[in-house]
Length: 161
Image (cartoon, rainbow, N blue to C red; front, top):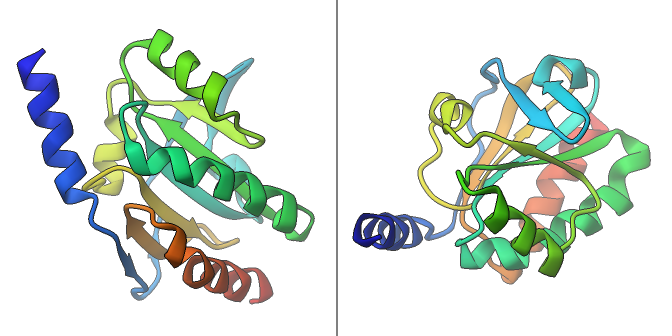
């Protein structure tokens, strides 16, 4: 329990928000469990993907879920797919979180943190914007309401290109 609290506190500290727009780099291969089966990242090639890594204990994640619902609704017809990858080991915690903060987008599961490690997740939430060719165009750690417009601008830019 003490280790979990320390880990949570250190990741919360790391979740100071930053956005990085770097030269495009290929997104790592990923396979996740989803309701009804599996999801491979490569299955979404041709779409713009807002990929978000989250955990049930993450306070900023509570604010990011309504934002991701809005993104999926607003930009889904233009080819945006929101995928939120949960890193919790306890499925009951995930279910409790989703009961309070329902997702209108794909929720995937990575309880061992394998894909989070491949993506280099540094805090919760960590998000990556992946273009139609599978290249990471934007990454950010944390979530604050005042950063919504900057994130949406990045999404619109990738959708238009």
